[in-house]
Length: 637
Ligand code: COA
Ligand code: AMP
Image 1 (cartoon, protein in one colour):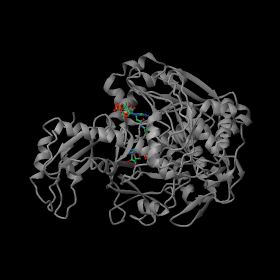
Image 2 (cartoon, rainbow, N blue to C red):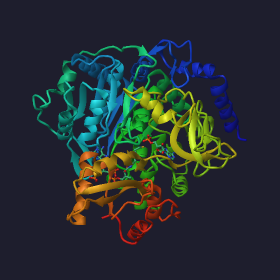
Image 3 (spheres, rainbow, N blue to C red):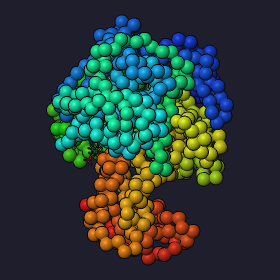
Image 4 (cartoon, rainbow, N blue to C red):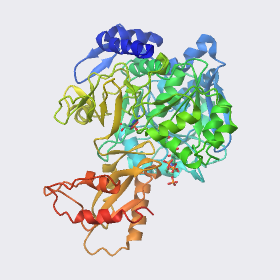
């Protein structure tokens, strides 16, 4: 055993067997207005980390570093490959903007506990808005820009938001994303609780603000609001006070509002920055994700700033903005120490620049490690990029629900020997087991349901917004005493975890989590569709993509190509471009068992070219022939 493994395992043991002492020790890295005397109040299916403590997360992420004399250190580097703008914001400047915007929010009636939806592109004002909410104890709920009006409306409604912060425009390759009409549609759909919309009029994307949204809310210009506002101080909140609600796809069409606490999250992220990523003050950390995802919350905003490091905020893509050397340019120009992205981004670079010729043009010697997450890291991509960059490549596995890695290679300990295809070891506080469908432990090396023994460690959720029952039903009911991750995988004899895929209807398209149930609900809205089933099929670039199998109502005469175009457009306008939906197969009947269960797994296996067994209970075996035949023609158009 290496030193790193021995030392890491000792900490893992302590986090379970001497749990309170371990986490109270970790909590000393945070500034509390009332420091914790107790680590946890554990009540079985629910728990509270640091139940008697109070803090402010924004203070820990910003003020604290200024008070420590580090005000002139860079907090945020905004690098836009779209506009070629690069801007560094110091901790002092960030504090000034955050405390002023917090004042603006307060002036517009936002108080502790109120929900603020942030619907913004990747610009520094998104970070300012999030930290400003945290400063006054308001709860932010960031919605990814690639979602359509209806999805935005569902989130505004469920969160009960009274304020929305947005911007006049975002940039995607070849197009400008106009946020205002999407938001206007969402406000109309959401039913009118929003009182104020604050808009950052982004240079180059002027927008004339109407006096009201039509749904009764007032438009306010960001710059005016900032100018008029008085900076405000921090509001100390209880450790369990929600810092944010982040919606994620579940098995149904209704997204789940994952609630993040304040104290547990701050402690967990701080531990993770040092011990997983090996990052501290003076380091530059770059999570090439979006503030709309959990990776953005934890590792563009809160993690690096809590650690007193510099966070890079990148507006652009891995390829095409302008080329497949974009990531290497950002690393070289900003002296990035650690990069975190999704495997799909690396596959995109591989596709365009398989010899990594563009890497030669940049000095990337500042880079110490590459972390990947969001989907399974295939061994081919793992080896290719590791050999190319000549730095450790770390696959780590986590979920919106956990907020930080469940399994990783803890580089802060010196790194355990990696294994291709594995996200290494369960992290401190995570007791990971593999169970069969009846809840019995499976032998080492055998695949099963990945579960985590309760309670989950600090930082992980234990609540779905507004619905305590939903948390229990979705995560705790399948395996009593354990959190069901929804992923399947196995542990090997060295304790390494291999995550193989989902056991439910969630799919991962380019690292974006989508629900096939939600896609089915939208496709079923089409007037010609009788029945539909959506499955996630293999995609060489995006890992997975959605494919819809539909049957039509009797007498439908719409030409198939037209129907196809309409369905693609329907998903785009109802869910959003992020679904990247384009595959449709029209069938006479869906393959089902005699009891009426649609054979989604068999359909996916056929399309993916995997061996499949025809279920004995199939209603009509000839239905499968049409799916098999479809493989010999190009499915997508
Ligand atoms: N706002 C508005 N629209 C957005 C958007 C945003 N923030 N992000 C993506 N979209 C749109 C895109 O413009 C595209 O629209 P189109 O169909 O009109 O072209 C669609 O959503 C799909 O976008 P994307 O998923 O980015 O696919 P792509 O084919 O444009 O690019 C990759 C493929 C691999 C380069 C890209 O997915 C990528 O960089 N992935 C990195 C993964 C990642 O960041 N994951 C986050 C979790 S860590
Ligand atoms: P999200 O909540 O969007 O972060 O998606 C979480 C899901 O992404 C997990 O449940 C997994 O299915 C998948 N995932 C994330 N990271 C990994 C990884 N390193 N390996 C395999 N799957 C992953």
